[in-house]
Every structure is written in structure tokens, then in C-alpha cells.
Length: 510
Image (cartoon, rainbow, N blue to C red):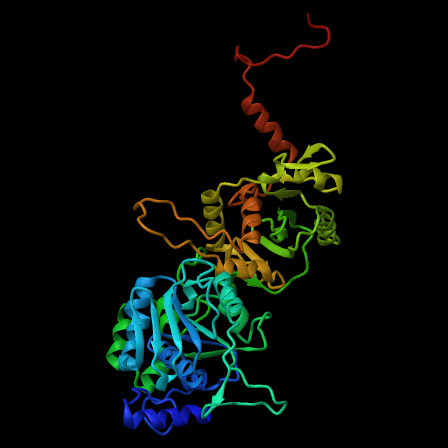
């Protein structure tokens, strides 16, 4: 396929137009290896190109969309972005800058439809917003491309995969192109995304990133920073300098360096795994222990075991996190396994107060989720559900108190909320919990609201903190006194002329 691309480039350049970007020759200017690899590796079905601003990802996406239309005549693709206006102003503006409209037989801007002339493949491209989860329910596609894919979710991506069912037969000089077994070759189908990284909780990380435990074999990630784009000549030094002058450190890491750890809309901006996640240490018998539970039916049930030091530092030491509609009996057994071997019996088991609702029925009897847990030997108390208070409690606990002695390092300066690095689900949710994006006209003082997704361990953390004091005051050490000091203290208090002094009678008093 790479040879066909090169022939296409050589065929089109002298006759029609010159591509404004070098995707082939590393010895020539405007060549970026990651951009070239994203474009040329056609044996990879699902490709993602991410990183900093100005790294050429949208340009590469536009050219790849054109090549899939040209190299596989009769193909059909879709170009999408969450917001249709931004799609027209950015993505499609770049597409029309790169691809001359004289290649089009039809272009209906209102419908978002392009059909190429036969010499340029005769293929079709639809383009539009991705606001509906089923954004292409009536199309059989050979490929699709999401630009700024961090704006959309996994549901829309999975829907795109479900539409990759177009059968496009391949021909060579008008004759069917046959495989060795005599069957005709058909064009492969593709899905590709271009994006700025949006945290390790996104489907982009989940499916594309090599460090993800859910990385899929037919997915590949290509990355480049703004500085790579600068070296390739995509942007100028003054562009980079201007962003560095106004961007806060976190924004610069995301938008210039393409960091996965920094993203827009993070709820717990104070949370930093470097500060709040520690290696496991032996469980201390001087700690108090608690259990928090967020029960889920189809969603995961999250259970955390917490150790609280005498100074009030809360440490998540164990967790259970599992969905799939498992029954209460299963989660109750997992909870009992979690607390097995603790130095002390847990003080409390704290659960979502919604579990006290009598909304379950069986054999004509109405009961609650808590009734079921009670049946299996788990007796929780309700936490408080108010979101704003829980959010404030978590933020206060994440703050590093310079006077607080760290329970592991023993030096001053410690947050009041820590977790063992074995509690991977809690770390993932705390790292990737996001605010909802405002839609339409929003009142200036409208309350912020987080996305109700991947928040189960966060919720049970709120329930846990809602029943504990934010700060613990250590009792003062008792002052040792001898008997003579006590007698002198009592004599100083004695006043025989005090008529208000309480006089206690005896058993003989009337």
C-alpha cells in the first residue's frame, strides 16, 4: 500500500497540485517521523495520533481521509467532531485547504457530503457532529475519523466500529484484483483519531496507549509534542514562546508536551500520585480501621479498607472493585476477605445511604440492599450523600499540612488522605474524575457537576470521610501529680461559707 501512496503522490503532484507537507522523505524539510508513521502504516486498523498543539495531527488526518478515498475507489468515510461548528471552522477548513475542490463531483455543505470525481476515486465522505451516540446509524462505512477525539466518549467510538461494514471490492486497471484463492480483494476498514491527551481514564488511553492493561492488539498510538512540530517547521519559535508566556505549568504540560497526567476539567486538581500514593507498609495496631462501600448492581461495587493513624491521616490499604451484576452475597464475602487479618476489628462499615431504600422485592416481600448485607453478616451505617460537602472533605484531606508528620517518611509535611499503590482503581478514579462540560446557556452561578462515570471508589471515599472529623486533635499528655499536690488543690477549692455548695446526704437523709 505504501507503494501505491508514493505513485499517487508522484502522479498527482505535477498534474494537479503539490501536497503542502512532506510525508515521505526524511531528508527534506517538514518531515515528522511520528506523523509519517501514522499516515503510512496501513496494516494497523485503528490508529491514534496525539500530543501537543501544532504537531500536524489534523493535517495528517485530512490527508489520510483523502488517501483512503482515492486508493480504495468507491469507498465511504465519515469525518466527525463533537461540535459541528468547530468541525467546520477547524477540521474541514484544513481539509479544504489541502484537497482542491476541483476533485469533487458533488459537495453539499448543508448535508455535509462530498463525492469525488471518478479519476480521484469516486468515493464519498460524510462529515458532521458527534452529539448523538449513534451518529451514523444509517451508514455502512469503510473508515471514520474523529478529530479532537478527547471530546467524545467510548460509546461513540464503539458505535463507529459497529458501522465499519462496507465491502469495497478492489480492481486493477478495471479487472477484479484476486487473491491467491481466487476470491476478490476487498478494501480494509479503518478507524482513526487525532487528539490532545485527556488522562488515563479516557478510551484513548484504554485502547491505544501501550501502558494500558486494556491495550488492544490492532491499535497503535503515535505521539509528538509541540517542540517536535517546531523542529519539523510546522510552527515557529514565536508561537511556542507566546504559549509559554501565558500558559500555566499544567497547561503547558498538556498542550505543548502532550502529557497524559494533565487534562482539562480535572475535579481533584490537588491529587498527585507522587504525593498521595505510597508503597504498602505493615498495618499498625495503633491505627483505627474503617470500611467504605459503594454498592452497584450493574456498575462496579467498590469497597475500601482504611487505616486511620492517631494523628488522623487516612490511608486506603485494601480495596475490592468489581462489576458484572454480582450478587450481594458475593460482595459481602469479598468484604469479609478484605478485613481478614487486620490488626483490629473495623470501627465502622459505611455505605451509600441510598442502599437503605426499600426498593427491592422478592417473594412478595419488600426489602433494601442493606437488608441483604445484614443477611450475610455485614452491618453498615449510612454515610452522607451530599456531593458538595463530600467534595470539600476530599479536597481538605488532599491538602498537604506542613506541620503534620508523614506516617511513612516520618518527616513534617503530609496530606491527610493517602493510599497504598495496590489500590489501583482508587488511584485511577481520583486521577481521572472530570467535571461535566457546560451545554448551552448556563447561569453564571450554576453549580459545578462532575461526570457520573468511573466514580465508585470516589463515592465511597466521600461516605467514609463524611463520618470522620476532618482534623484530629491529639489528647494532651496527662500531667503526673503526687498525693500532696492533689490535697493542696482540694484545700484551695474548699470554702465552708459557700452556701451554694452542693451538700450530699447519706442513706439516712430524709
